[in-house]
Length: 208
Image (cartoon, rainbow, N blue to C red):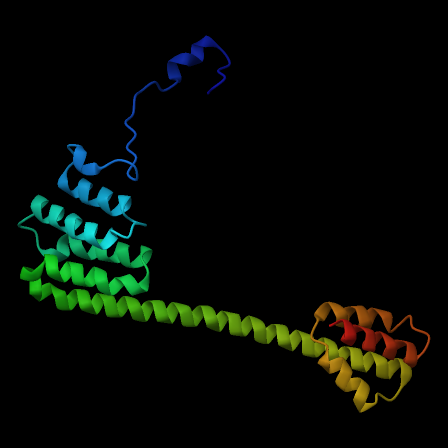
């Protein structure tokens, strides 16, 4: 893969073997992996499978086998954070139920997990609100720019031809395409008379 400039460089080219494990195609339980690694690979293997929740039971059991003396929150909370961020919100309740079933002896921690779920849900809602807020601000700015362009066009007509009748002003304000408004603004300095400009306005409205 590497075109070395001379043989002297060959000594610096890495030469080693590696083991490739396909976590989707292969079964981690067929290998002598640690229980925790088996649990992680099971989660990855069945990530998009309808059997995901069922395999999550098995993954949690493997963790309990590996660390029977560890407290629930020592390893469950990071995993729950991970699952929350990569799984759908609808599945989150099911994931909570799996944890509750598999760690029934750790009732003192379940309230903490439930609070974590609630907190994460609030954070997601807040994030969605902020995204919508940014969209609203962007749309408002866009509407403001269009409105300013409309008023500039009306002022340009007034400077060129005099009085702007309400009917024409209403037509100009009905145009929501910034490109069309800019085009009309450029054309107003080249039309022969106000009738020619009104025809252009009508053409833009009919095409929209």
